[in-house]
Image (cartoon, rainbow over all chains, first blue to last red; front, side, top):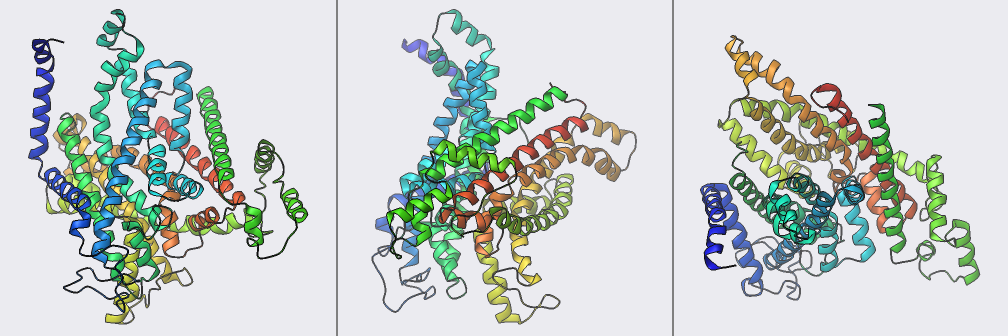
Length: 293
Length: 320
């Protein structure tokens, strides 16, 4: 493609994108959410430098379950480990699982939805049945069974969550692709002799990405809650690795003796999920101006 | 209509079969042999012949597809089998003992959530951008972002630890226990936890639905013929908003298990959720499979009913 062509081709899209960006940044809550998520990302990346102690190995003798103090602002857990350091390291797991599992779900969901919507017929019937079956399954139950079967680890958790939550993307993408399929530009591409694969990649998928991005940003939060629920049941990353859900589970075991253990990891989950949800709401309002609430 | 119904029921049945097949396969992939789990992993000296005898007794020596067919056939006759791990207890009995507890718990929670969330959601929409509206939005956002098991822990700390320490026994209520349902006070915290989540969702849906209806023309017509604002709101707007709200409630009922699994574990409540987690961790095939099928059936039936109610109530929707 020549340079002039490229400029002409993208000029229109660029300006709508810029308008959407401006709408997003005009939304105060969305910006707050973005700032919080960036802050959490920095915490996750630089956890070893930021944490005052080692999350697993620094065990303070005689400090089991001691509450917050100036030197240890979040106190100690039931084994005498510094809770602040453990919560900081827990950020890594939460963000990693939240983002990677969402990515896996998006990839599977878009592929399945695009195939079902584009080809229709028996392919659509079969894939729709699979989507319906997955959506009829209480997700947390499926996750518990799968995590127990595969043995808890970081990789398992990410793959298991990603491989089970994609049905919603598939359903949305399928519906949009079915209407896109009838549009003139697809007919034109077909008339020009484009292959199905090229039409799907170049013409169909770019047009559904907006809805997918909105859906994905709204789902990161719920995936973080799912992961912490699994960790809470002992079915996510194994101890002693620090995860927010895992610390909550320690806190639950000692809830009446050392109530402070459960307080802070839970607050971190709420803050993180709120931040992602604000970003998602902001993106939805910015990318879909027709839907004014 | 009747052919559509047949089609939907057949499709629902297919989904149920697919899900039970998936569960069966997954459970058989599980590491660990239930026979050893049953015998306590090598603590009792046992010969290979005895192990084979146990396998044969429970049908574990047969090929997988046969095991599946036997199980599915029994299921159709209402026979859920007997628990392999808790030897001899019929699965049906375990499930039937747990269901009323989970059902009651969620019924109370749902009733509380509807009673609080629907009126507040309507009021928030009617007075958009008032302090009530902002509080409602903040509550919804927080409620959706809060893991219910953390809320449960915090309420235990507050009401079972600090309130008795600071205030002693509460008037009328007395003392709230941290775990279990042995006294009626034990129900308070789990119901509040489950209701909070439902409330957050319902408030948001109610407010959103009413807000979408307010600028529509039939509302303007109702106003312009001089009806009082209250009448416009309740007779014209709310009656039209109820359908989407009912749908959401139906959807929440279908997924009761999702909300209740971890909450029951936190509060040590012997309901379906706790039975499920215990059975997964103990490799109790029979119980897990049966529970999964029961809940898949619940989801399929509720979805079907919601669609049918929608079509019956709203004549614009044609079933084809």
